Picture 1 (cartoon, one colour):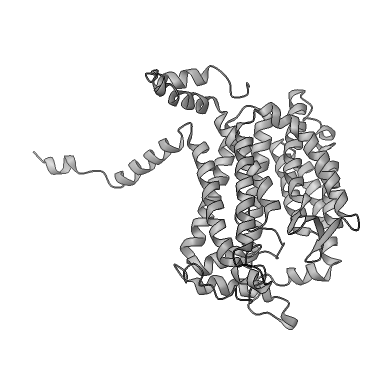
Picture 2: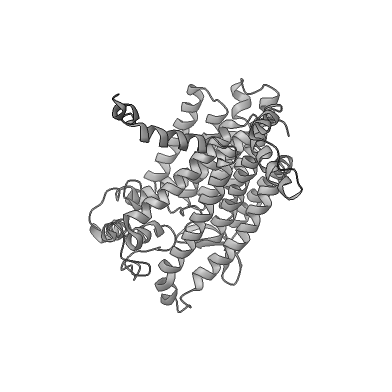
Length: 428
């Protein structure tokens, strides 16, 4: 008789139902594929908008058209999109075949950087090669991609032969080659790129199941080298001293760090509007590269910066899902390495802008101005897309969509799942 109590939903039932729907949606076969594709494209498009807004005054200061940097970035984005599509369609065996040529090419170009007359210094770092006119190439950006592909192929082959249980096979030749790349980078004085490359190395070792003692040993050696490099450089010590700075300090040593905080603070909840930044008018150095996140906070506010963080979090989580669901060791190491690269670089860049980390001089992936950084990153995102498409359940889901044009639309989700379960994800 008391029907009112019977139809009343249980307390918290709406939230539980919403959670269950979200969980089921996330567990669908193509979710990681769409999240990686959508998040990376949104970050790139929003980055193009912010590059145009943040670089206008910088271009006019050099007596260039206000859209100069935007046009170069747009061209790089078009080329990067072609590389992304190419990488997303390449089979895994071709990615593995490219690993050694890519590594040799990256090392060769990084050696050329140190040759007088060929290498070019920017902001005190000798890590560029001039390609003629306004175009330059930073080989160390391609070194990140080369280490991931080569390291993933190396560890996968050793795992197939059950050699990773021996510490010498886990460390050699992965660690010496990584240290070779780090040495070439540090010859040019680029500490920021060296930090990201070190993070990639630790990510690969962690994915390979390195024992705690071995992991701690390599970390200790890297930390000691890092401390020595920092303490022997007055510029790096000054950057370290600017963490959490509230004023520029003597000689304006912390000018960039403090004005980055000013830009974020003046943005408020929803920002001053696109193009309305004050800090980009000469107050904040590198507004379209290393500190583009600060201009984003000033013009789009907290809502804009949280949206960027959410996109990077979604991209990172989808990459972890791809690495965790595969049975192919190469896919696991490569997907994990790419995810480590993008998330670590985003953390280092955003942490510096927020004053939580020293300014390392690394761009925000897919977002900051710089074609040398954008091209290999978009190719790496294409790798993640290829791996997400190659999951058995994802292949079956994509196959379901093609027959609708040919009259074979009567395949159910259950049959798709049965078909996907017949082959382990490690088979190619």
